[in-house]
Length: 338
Figure 1 (cartoon, helix red, strand yellow):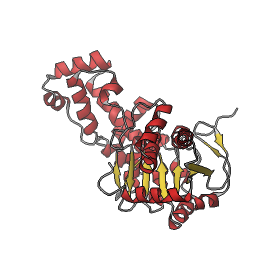
Figure 2: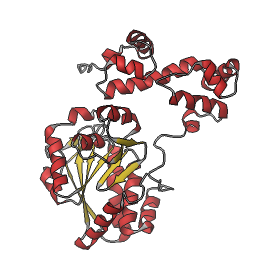
Figure 3: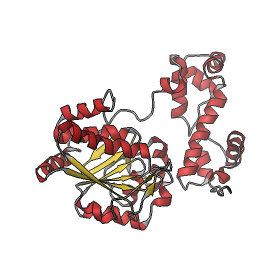
Figure 4: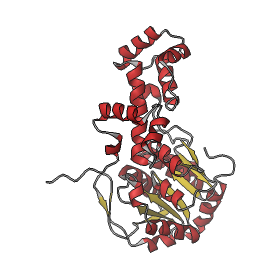
C-alpha cells in the first residue's frame, strides 16, 4: 500500500518535470519479458496524449544490448537504441518476465545502477523487481512482484520488505506485479501528474471500469478461482493455503470449519471432485514447483517448506503428480529437433 509520504517524492518530482515539456519514460526490455505487462504500461501514455490533445508523455525503448528483444510470447520488439538513450528519461522501467535469473547479468545491473546514479526514477514491471533487488536499489524499500515469484524473491533477498500489492511506490522506487496491474500503476501516475479526470478518460478508453488501488489483491478471490460459493468450503481451502509449511490434519480442518470429517469429505467431492487430502497435497506440490523453478533452495529445504517430512516422500509424491522428479524439474529440457 502507498502509505503516508512514501509516494510524495515521486509525485513532486514528476509534477516538477511538467515545466520541462513531455515527461520522457524509458522501457528497458529484458528477454522473455511479459508483452501484456509492457503493453499495459506504454499504451496508457499514448492514450493520455490523445485524450489531452497534446504530447504529455514521450517514450523510448531499449534493451541491455540495444538489440531487438523477444517477449515471452515470441513477439520481437525493436529498440530505439542502446541503453544510453535511457539516460535522458525521467522515469525508466525494467520490464521483465520469465527466466529472470538467466538474464540478471552484470551488464544489465550496471545499466540500472547508472540510470539511478544519474537521477532517474527507477521502476520495475513484473520480475523486473528481481533486477532492482540484485542491483541494490530496494534496500529499506517496500516492493512487490508477480505473486508466482514472491517466494523466490524472498528466498533470494530475505531482508526485502515484499508485499502482495498490485504495485508499490516508495520514495523514488516503483515496483509493479505485472499483467494488467501495469495499467493501474500508469493510470495512478497519470492522475498524480495531470489529474484524476484524465486518468479516468484513459481508463474508459481501455474499457477498464475501475482504476484499482495498489492495495487490491493480485490474485482472484478464492470464490472466483474455485467457482464455488460454499462458505465453509472456502474457509477450509483458505486454511489449507495458509498452512502449507505445517499442514493441518483433516480432523483439524473439519473442526476449524465446524464440520465433521465426513461432511468435509462430502463438500470436497461435491464441489471440487476430489478429497480434502488430495486437494491439500496438490496445493503443497504446486508451491514446491514454484520454489524449484524460481529458487536455489535445496530439495530437502523445499520439501520441509511445503510440509513434507522427508525429501524421499516429497520426491515420490511429486513424481506421481507431475511425472518427473523434483531434481528433473530443475534440469533444462533439451531443445527438440524440428
